Length: 162
Image (tube, rainbow, N blue to C red; front, side):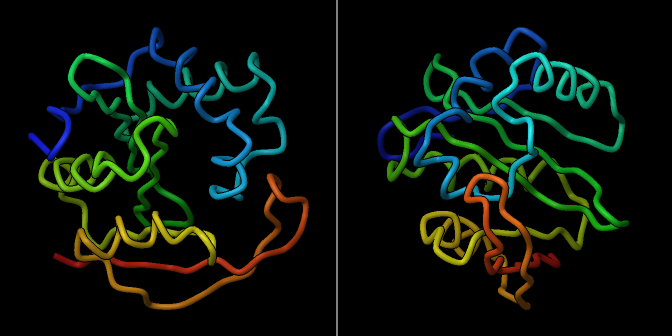
């Protein structure tokens, strides 16, 4: 789908994509906003092992976000504690350009599991807008330890039913 700047499309994530996606999630500002990351998220070997395993998990829908012909990020549906959840990561070069909003809109057309939840750090206003523009409704909050910040923070919980 075309947004104002790029032709956005999704394709299944491959093992070859993982090196680029690993580099994206090392960005300090992105890590701060994402907040809830695994303890070993800066360990490339652990990252590659984890995500290679997830590519073979039939309950996970991993897609790579392409902006024109460039990898701009990733988006996935996974199951946590019995609930379908959405996660995405956009390279900072593409922040504020509608890439995440467009990618999520396209993803939700193909991934029809409902309800589906999104969780976001209380101060990640960009991600909150992405969810809200795609019909997610804030339904509550939770608190948890954010490895990227090394402290407990509030997390907003969103839900999409249709």
